[in-house]
Image 1: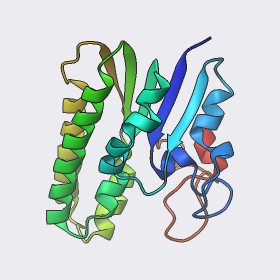
Image 2: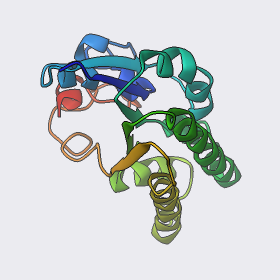
Image 3: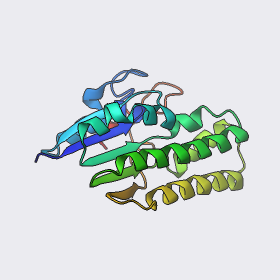
Length: 197
């Protein structure tokens, strides 16, 4: 009952487009719906536009200072969405892995449970890769497999105190759901119903 859960992330944690396109609404974010289901305190540490580097820079103030028992991390989308081509994707993948390793190491000072959520699933990744001009299915599959390998390595890191768990898919029933995504064109965020899913 007295546990502290911190949800660290970007716009997907901040609740962007939950009620109004491209506007954060933390009252309809996934951490808000999470809070309704548990007696522990749930803290929304999501900031729209954050990359993994941004989240690492504010980790002490926004996460470690709260002395969390559980941390849910959903980051990486902005690292990749800022990439303009395949070389940018390569740099984003390297940056994501390095920054996430640093985040895990910084959190590994006390016993805690760290959930690392993939910010994509197959459909979301293929959609983004297509928009980057990577239209070949085999090439898309290769990028997805490389991204999957990064997340697998992250949850396999050796830790002294923390336990690491991978959340494989946050998008099933949302990205391919009915009335669960923002209706605004070019908006890849859930609406409130999607965040609840």
